[in-house]
Amino acid sequence: MKNYTITVNGNVYDVTVEENGAGAPATAPVAAPRAAAPAAPAAAPKAAAGAGSIQVKAGAAGKVFQVPTSVGQKVEAGDTVIIIEAMKMEIPVVAPPEAGTIASIDVAVGDAVESGAVLATLN
Image 1: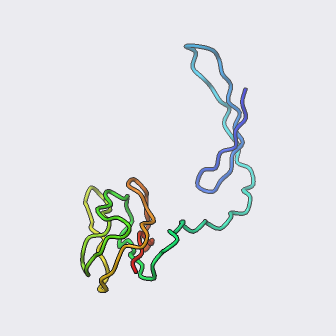
Image 2: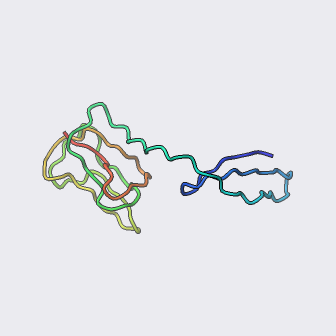
Image 3: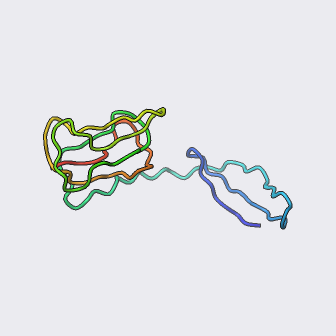
């Protein structure tokens, strides 16, 4: 038997899993919730050493679909910096009214992002 601690939606469960051998279905007792430890504050995403002062934020929640830019690339106002996917639609996240150079890209393809999350920064 193996013991695991699992956290689901902020609820912490102690689970014991028993291995029954090859071909036999595995069973596990129903886990009872235990008191959750106080949540630690979420860590801020790591920014590159030269992170810029102009933030490029997600306009909607979704998943990062494509990153067509790279650090050091110059962008004009309205250029697509990141593309997120939400409800099977591709939504471009564009550079703000200021032109600049990409200082950091704080997400990767496949990352889930919330509306308002900082995706990249410009100088």
